[in-house]
Length: 78
Image (tube, rainbow, N blue to C red):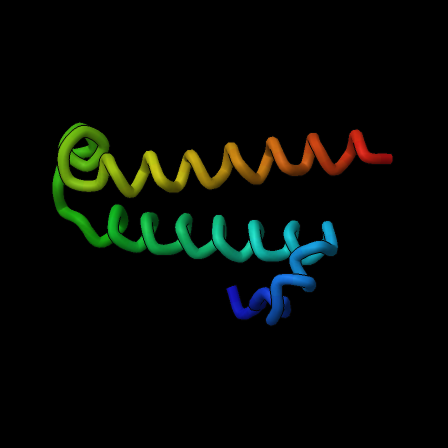
């Protein structure tokens, strides 16, 4: 969680490894933020999933899917 994306300019994001790093950091932050909220909540699992943090959980899942799809794409580049 201490790592950060080192890209500073638009040209830096032309490097596939910088994109990978940026996605890693983004997803890690989403997961950490969501998990802190969920673990601090005294609500039931059903309320957490369906009402309180549903949008956070969806955002976390979407970030994960984007990262997995990117890694599949990157592996196909050779």
